[in-house]
Image 1 (cartoon, one colour):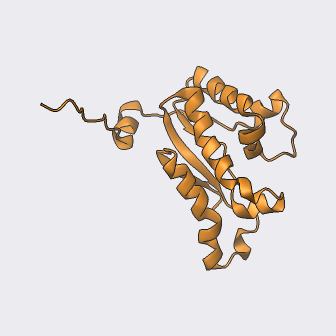
Image 2 (spheres, helix red, strand yellow):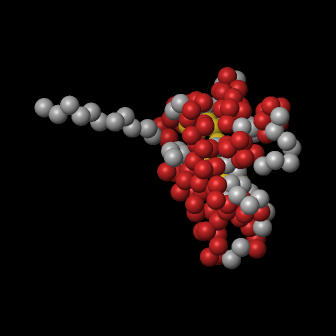
Length: 152
C-alpha cells in the first residue's frame, strides 16, 4: 500500500469562475512611497533593499480584500537594469518579487509583472527574447500563476 498522496491541484480558471469578480491590488507605488521609497527609485529595487516594505504593501492590499496580486517586477529586465549598472541582479530581483509576495500572503493567485522597456521599439527581434525571456523564466519558475504584460 502506497503512502504517497496526490498533491492538490489548482485550476486558475476554476478559481476565477468561483471568485468572480476578482479584486486585484492596485499599484504598490503609493504605499512604498509612503514608507519612504524615493520617487525616482525604480520600484523593483525594493525587492532587494526594502523587502519588509514590499511584504507590508502586499498585506495592506490583502486586508482591504484583494485576492489577486502582481509581483513587484515591472521593468526588471536586462535592458532597464543595465542602465543602472545592476544587470547582474536581474534574477535576484525577479525571484525576490515572487518570494516576497508568497512570504507575505502565502498561496494566493499571482501574476508575474512584465513591463515594456522604454526603448522597446529600438530592439531588433533577436533582442526581444534576450530582454524579456529571462524575467519570464524566473517568474514562471518561482510559481507565477500567469504573466501580466503591461505596455506591450
